[in-house]
Image (cartoon, helix red, strand yellow):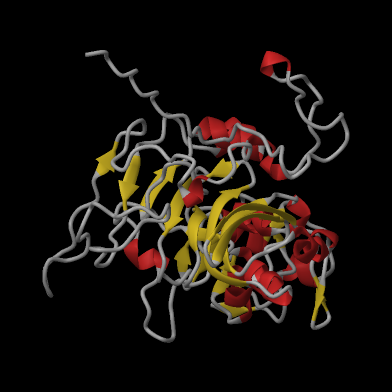
Length: 379
């Protein structure tokens, strides 16, 4: 196979070629993320029209024949996105040099190759978005997207408004500037307190580092929303695919970019031993053992559950991961419409102004509505 010094002839001659960047095309078909595709190109693993390239500075069209490691790439698959409730103790990477269990090792076997949108560290839990589209992954991770990541943080100590005010203004830690956070005190429980935290950048260990900077140690961190997508009643280890309509409405994707039909119910991932542990909402995990029964035996097949009532029931006010009742639809942090709410209550900030921390909305791309309880019958 021929090898080009930088790119095929058209690119090497400086000609402007229509189409998309080669790394974007590779990410779109699910080969890897865009950054991963660029690394593959630099390693000489990608060829275009029979010529090995070593630079991602090349546009390609549908007429070009692209191969990775000698195998032609397929056509772009419809864009799909899943919500995953990451439990504690899992690493958000494809491989771990320390041999720890990764998120991808526990996912249901029938899931296609997926990538995570951002990360949650080993000791963090809650909502993690998964997608089969590398270009979408990159777009959703960019700070310029402006999506609000919302967390429930349990901290050791007694936070005060004065302690949290620097976080709301933006702080500088070791020369690294952090954007202003949305922080509210929910309740004090003995030596610990629960906080609601909203960030837009998603820096490495941002919430933990920021809290430590003001003298508060985070001992539990649960992500409950990423942009318009919410954790809702999804239990620890469950995976649920977003409906195509949500992808079109919330991500602006065209109808021909997403799969047709309806997404299936939530499916339990292949978690390791969970007996005696609690789920991401702080409740006992009633499923017991979900991993292999004994060494050498296959893991239990994932079982789907109906989207309405799930084992464990709906979250209530005492539920740490339930968060503030006002969190939801305005999770991207945009301006509110200034429309009056029902029963004559004000409906948020005036048009054009950002919503205040206590009015983050009640709707989301994934409904968290549960079946109302039946009223007690008289004896």
